[in-house]
Length: 168
Image (cartoon, rainbow, N blue to C red):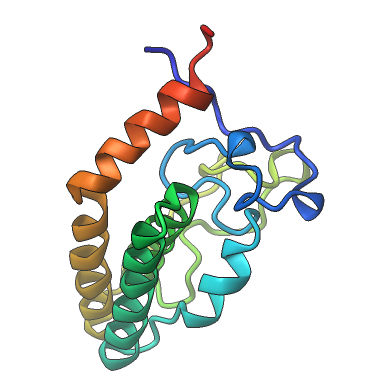
C-alpha cells in the first residue's frame, strides 16, 4: 500500500492534531517531531539525555505518556511519543560520537538548510563519549518497546489505511 509522505506544508501552528488526526502523517523516522501540537508541548519538556540518570527518567516519562495515549486510543500521541524516544536515541548517539553534536565540518550551505547530509562537507572524527552512549542505550530500549507494541503497530496500520493511502 503506498504511503503518503509527511506533509511539511501544513499550518502546524493552527492545527490541533488531537482534534484532527486526519492531517497527521507518520512519515519516516522522526519527521514532524517538533511540529505536531499539542503533543510537542506535552512531550518536549520531558526530553533530556545529558546523563544516563537523566535519560532514564526522560525515557520512562515519555514511555508513560505513550501508554497514556494508548489508553486513550490516541494514535497520534503514541506515534509522537515513539518519535521522541527515537530522537532521544539518535541525538544521544550523535553526541556520543561527536562531542559538539556536529557531524560535519563547516556550515550547512544556505540552499541545503533543513536537509540532512554532508553537502560536500568533511565528516568530523568520532570521539566516543560513554556517558552519551549509555543515554542512547536507555532511549533505544524504550523506543523499541514503543515501536514493537502490538497495539501501536495495529493502530499505525489503521491510521495509514484510513488517512495515508493514495487510493481512497
